[in-house]
Amino acid sequence: MEYWNKMGILASDVETGTLLSLAQLKGVKAASILNTAVEYKSNLKDGIVDYDTEEKICIEGEKRER
Image (cartoon, rainbow, N blue to C red):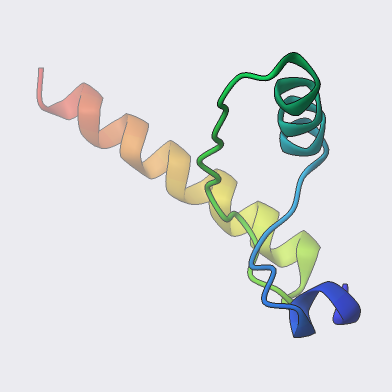
């Protein structure tokens, strides 16, 4: 990741790589919008737990609006 970060790459995932490769082979346009769950060089486990907790808080807030 250090190499790619120095090249200006901000995020990566397996699905986007596949999507863009297939689009190029087929000659069609493609794009991907990524939601960053864990910042670069952050603790992965803590980041996932925080992401899950925040999602549950949002779901609870939606339920209370009804």
